[in-house]
Length: 337
Ligand SMILES: *[C@@H]1O[C@H](CO)[C@@H](O)[C@H](O)[C@H]1NC(C)=O
Ligand SMILES: *[C@@H]1O[C@H](CO)[C@@H](O)[C@H](O)[C@H]1NC(C)=O
Ligand SMILES: *[C@@H]1O[C@H](CO)[C@@H](O)[C@H](O)[C@H]1NC(C)=O
Ligand SMILES: *[C@@H]1O[C@H](CO)[C@@H](O)[C@H](O)[C@H]1NC(C)=O
Image (tube, rainbow, N blue to C red):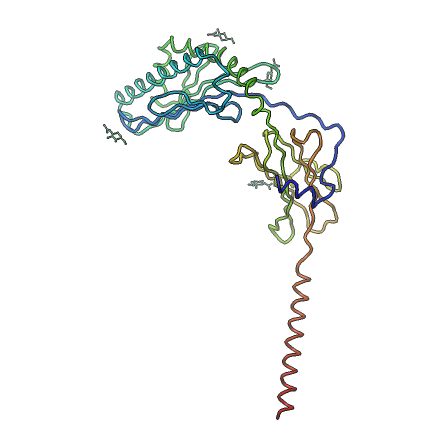
């Protein structure tokens, strides 16, 4: 925030009103559940489970008791007590049976411990109202099987024997498949909509980006301008470069990192523009973000004055002083003799 203010104060005209910016698309929403089962041996399994709405962690599973921990104040009130109890019971049964089945398989087929199963499931809701749903199970970091929600069938994703076996096992639990179908077909989207409604203040949080522009000199004939944009929320952002006020079109001289998370649930991004030194153009970085209310953040690049001139003058002065001192000392010595 401070750097943000500094920018406005130090660089007058940083804020410009751009006429009729297209509104940034309101992001789709996603409710995903992650489960990790790390089997140390037949009796020892480390379990981690958590649930995420967009980029906010809603809930996790308490170790050993497998009780749900609510990680946002609005999560528990979003659903009824009965709905939470149902989910809690379902989860306990499901994790318990998973461990039994996977241990039995490992024992029977002499799969070596330790190994890890990871599952990811959930639904994605699009602005047009349609949604998709999925369930994926992985083994030691490789895709193993996925669930075709519409057909209610498990399909292997690997040629390993373990994939064939687990696919067969899961397809024999028709009760589990039917429950999962209903959960993914209806419950997931229904609950997601309730969470979105109750958590909208956190989800619609708007945090303004701050931006700085500086140059890197990767070689004698090129200059890389860097625009570092950080501290913004939500994630969608648009960063462009302006050359003499005109948007630089996409091309090989443009490059950007992905939008990466900061530790405080904001995001950051670096955008690069390769230019020739002293090309006589002016450059600025333009940031568009929903928090800016239709305005954009414009940060001009201010080339540093070449330092070599200063250094040359300092050299000349030092040499002059030395010459004068030596001459003075000689003159003084000659007078004394
Ligand atoms: C299983 O692993 C845990 C922790 O690594 C260890 O304490 C325990 O003795 C092991 N049990 C068996 C039966 O090997
Ligand atoms: C809704 O949007 C999604 C994602 O953009 C797209 O895949 C889907 O086809 C759209 N559905 C309809 C009915 O327009
Ligand atoms: C889930 O929805 C699909 C269509 O999208 C339908 O074919 C299937 O029968 C539904 N399953 C359940 C369990 O409701
Ligand atoms: C773009 O940036 C990436 C990562 O910083 C780098 O690996 C890649 O070489 C860059 N591409 C160009 C064309 O500069």
